[in-house]
Length: 94
Image (cartoon, rainbow, N blue to C red; front, side):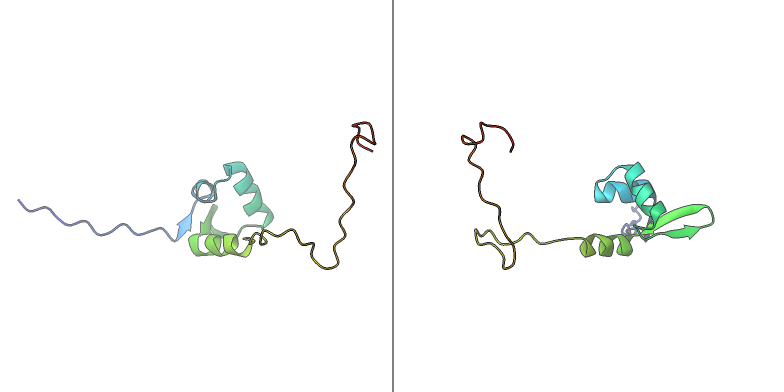
């Protein structure tokens, strides 16, 4: 008896809300609300709502920010308030 070779598993093109939520590590409810408000890209097929994998990946990339380089320099045009001397203010928030 020969074993039949299984075709490789293909990643789905569309995800359910639950699958998308797991993929971006958010709650089902939050993901649903973001899709409902139009913040997440979605496809409607009849009454079903699906999120395209590629669009979800682009959505994440578009919202990814790079951390600024570790530096103690203050960016131009940004003022930094002076440090609070907690002893002088009696340990309370001024």
